[in-house]
Length: 215
Image (tube, rainbow, N blue to C red; front, top):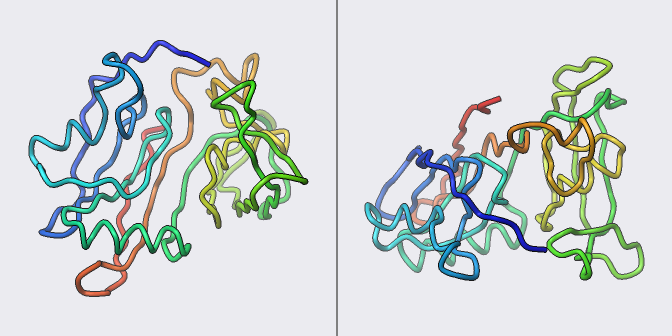
């Protein structure tokens, strides 16, 4: 599935930087890393490289998702942080606006996911071949037409939050892949990585960083 990539002019905001780690607020509409082809070279890590030439990737956010990301500034920091993500020792919280009223107020989605090969980059639920994926949710406020939630992924599968919410019948507003009709008719995907907690690779102290949702 191909798309026309027109990266946003909005620049990433540095939340924290020291000699080991860099934490930024990624704008929506910007790839985390370069895509295939010269037209997809403009991305978050390349924009950061000018001020932070040693920046190294640890994890990604979808093109359409905004919010908190951490990068390593040394190979040691990259390895340490990457291991925390792999072992699910980081804590991530997202804010999303969903179609319709989600009930009950709290819950967990436990649906295994796999890439939908004929329709890449879409993912799909597959109970036979899918990899385990769990997402906790907590309603912040709701009306008959829309629900604002906090989402806490326990795993880190591609498009996990987007597929899980769509499977509940409440797709994330503005989702170009998993929403349709009026639910898709928004200027951006209403999904934002609000907070991230991890152990600092040098001190071992748990640190938390936040970026308020722009919607």
